[in-house]
Image 1 (spheres, rainbow, N blue to C red):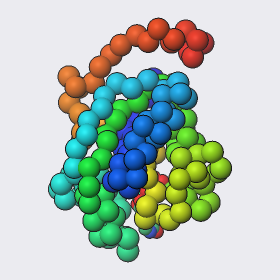
Image 2: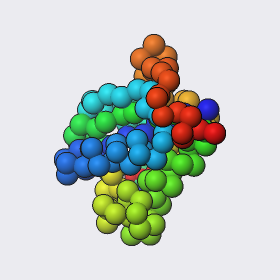
Image 3: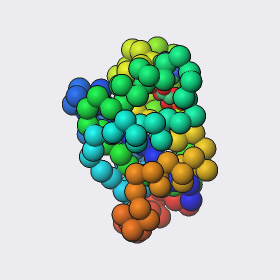
Image 4: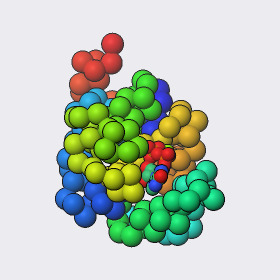
Length: 149
Ligand code: IDP
Ligand code: MG
């Protein structure tokens, strides 16, 4: 089972798209095991986006991600990373597949609505930035046998 950290970024919250975005992952069949509503501090943003430090868009990215509340979630599933990334769509919304979250709701890379971890290792590392192991819920879903073979 992989875990992915998903964020509804501040634009998703401000535009009233929280339910829409969360529903995409829920309907896909990923299983929610943790969820928080919070506003990122600069320190948290710098930890989350450490790999991008020094890139030309870094300061604007930290400004954007700390500009309002976000929803942080951990979703679990076989191949959860790839499944979530395809549901999210390409980084640049103008190039994101129609039907993906970014392809349906976004216009610009600096306002791309949602974050999803890019590898199983980063899924675990990023989940640990936001959630302690005790905050993650292990549960059996009534529909599991209809979603997982
Ligand atoms: P991802 O979110 O699809 O994994 P990354 O390359 O990891 O994309 O970049 C992290 C975030 O940084 C993007 O989601 C976007 O918000 C922002 N970002 C990336 N590249 C640019 C850029 O060229 N200009 C402005 N913002 C960018
Ligand atoms: Mg990324």
